[in-house]
Image (cartoon, rainbow, N blue to C red):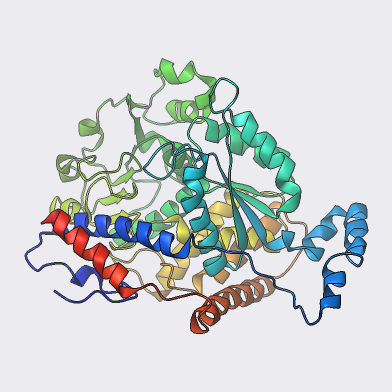
Length: 484
């Protein structure tokens, strides 16, 4: 058993040699959760606000604030688009959530989502060179019910301070209305990362998985387990990119989606699910056991836990089957178990397993691309362009069954993705300004390098402390003892 390293790179090697794969997986989850609690307490969160303009002398405060700043106010008053150049608005994202569906933890109260929303802001800055702020809001009405109109009103009121809005962890069915209304009524991009971001990265992973399996997207039988915001959007993007809806079967908590699901039809709030009831599963297959017979692809975004997807379901899939089980923090079946039952490619949402299909390689580059051309919205075409950009990047540097998409360590993927998204925004007619692909690539590359160098400089100079190794070892020892 090795000593845990400060950078956690040897996490797979630090557990007792007699641990089974299942014990290692459980211990990893416990360790990461324990360390997260201790590390967040040690740092009091993970983001801060710092100036980017100099303070050479105190008279500069009269430039950055009053009386000089009056020029900025009147200039923007006469031309609101000038705010993108004269303030940080052009590179600033609001991460908005009512925290009603936080990862796998459900309704955590508004403040309960701050850790996740700060995390999104953290990744946007480091990976995409984008500034972001967490805004966790109370969406409850006078009767204590979560009201999507309150979120819509909030975003519309604060949109003038931001270049884009990232919606996050809003429960269904409210998330559908919130996104669809704000996409049309706001003058800046409003992006729902749980839905569009997950769909984009899933599509990227599927594109390369199908290449490795020697299959075409229009020919394969796809089963989607879970029918929340993520999987319904995944289905929509897959169909838009060539998947055959007649060969798709989706399941929610009450069974498969099909044209006779009157319960879904009767509730207009679930209009996205009803659209899929009408377009998928024409044979009205009712059970997972039947749906999985000969299936080429399983995409599960359902209840976290290693028993959610059954081994016997994987066992009856077709040759070179592809299994995406992306619930967090614990996948619906562990990769080793799916492989034992014959899966050819297995992906999860976890970075400590091969093939992490996670939004972290999507939203930083997508939002950066949208911001650079001052897009008014993020179209489905832009999300599909990002998926193909990610898949192409990975294919060029080499893919295999345990490496189907780029990871967060591949810094050069983000400027490429940003530039591809920016070009699609221009093509779709939603960009305020024009630029070439090379201009977009170089600008994104410069901003991302700046963000990474800034963080490194703060670490090198002690403004960001190293985490105590004792804290890491203590969390690891605790996790091992819990599993033994």
